[in-house]
Length: 159
Image 1: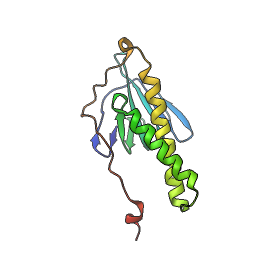
Image 2 (image 1 turned 30 degrees about the vertical axis):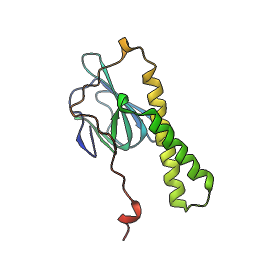
Image 3 (image 1 turned 90 degrees about the horizontal axis):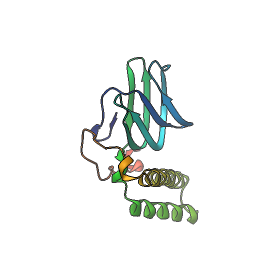
């Protein structure tokens, strides 16, 4: 599993749940090969020792082959690193942009995607922050938490 900042996790797992574009994908050993676009949501990985690791993905792609699952995420965040205050602020900003109705179609779509992504973050935060401390999984990934993904200006990429 990798994101824009590099490799996040590589290892054995028993079961992987990914936020596919059409709903959650559950992947066990010997799953049929597939490619899928990922939407914003949680990725759950059940490890051989029975523990479960959870990451929030901001979208990306997944490839399932007989040798394993490869996930290329736009950004991955550990659930404890989600900031509910910043998420609420981003939701309010996206709603304001959508309510104005004066923006171009590109800006409208970008605001709608931002709103969907932030709502998914908030749902994941609420789901895992309500778990009792004694039942919370350890988030022992191979790199430190990343505070923010780099912002990309799509208009700067156009010819």
